[in-house]
Length: 405
Ligand SMILES: Cc1ncc(COP(=O)(O)O)c(C=O)c1O
Image (tube, rainbow, N blue to C red; front, side):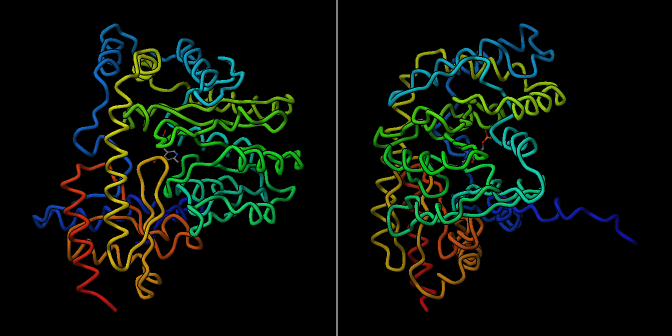
C-alpha cells in the first residue's frame, strides 16, 4: 500500500530520552524488571511527591469549577506570583512585571512558540552541546538551524567562550543557555554570564533564552538569573512547575521577558498572537502552581538535601569504577558519565543497549544529547533511593568488567 508521505520536519525529530524506552518496554513485557535511570521526572522515583498543598489547590480549583478557559497569557494571580518570584531571586532578581510573564503548557510549549515567532529560513539558534534534545529538534521545524557551541568536558562542562564567540554572527537570533544544565549539571558563574551578555550585546538581532527550569536544584546556592545581569540584551527566562515544584505532568511553565531597550515589541506581539490562537494553558493546573509559589517552601530544602546526598554518592561510586569518570554536577539531577574505554567511547549507544539487555539498567546514550559533544558518554538520573543507585552501579561495574575490550 502506498504510504501517505511524512514531512521532513516531522520525520527528523529525535528524542533520545524516550527512544530507549522502546527496547526497555519489550524487556518488561518479557517479565524483566528494569532499573530506570533515564527519565528526568521526579515522580517516577518514590519519595519525591508533589507537595500536598499544591495537590489540594489543584483539586480545589477543579471542585470550584475553575474548569473553563482562562486568559491566553495565564491567570493574573499566577503572573503576579511569578513576577514577584523573578524579582526576589536569592542571588539577585530583575524588574519583572506581571505583563512580562506568559504561561504555557510547559517550557516545551514556550519553546515552540518562541521558535515560531523568532525564526525564519536561514536563522540560527546557538545551543549548548550537549543539550536537552528539543533545542536541536524544534528550530528546524520552523526553518531555523541549531548550531552547537562547546561545553568543555575537561572543565566541569563550563561554556567554552572562545568556541561560542567563533559561532556568533548576524544570523544568530537566539542564544540558548541551560542553567543548571541538562545533561551535565553545570551551573554558569556570574563572570561567565557577564562575558556572554557582553558578547551578545555586540549583535543587535540576538536574544538570549535562559532555561532556568532547574534554578533551585542548585547544590552550592550560586545560581544567578541571567536577566538580573543584562542591561541591554533581551533575555527570555524559562521556568515552571515541572522540576523544582515536582509536578511535570501538570504541564505548566512560563516565559518571562526582560527587554531593557524595548526592541522586542514586534516579536512579543507575534508571541501574543500565537498564545491567543492556542486559547490557554490548563486552568486548574495553574492554581496548583500558584499554591506552590505562594505557599511555604520549607519542604524544598528537605528534597534538595536528599538529592545532594545521592549526587555525592553517585560521583564517588562512578569515579571508583574502572572505565568511567564523571564531573561533579552542581545542579539539576543528571550525571553525564564519560566512557573511558576507547571502544565504548566510540559506541555509546551500543553500551546503553547492551547494559539494558544484559544488566537491566536503563541509561541514555550521550550522543542523543549531541552527536558532536555528547558522544562517548551516557546520562543517568540520580533521583532513585541510594540502595537502588548502589545496585545500578554494581551492575554497571559488572558489565564493564565482563565486556572489557
Ligand atoms: C532543560 C530543560 N528544559 C525544559 C524541560 C521540559 O520542561 P517542561 O516540563 O516545562 O516542558 C526539561 C525537561 O527535562 C529540561 O531538561
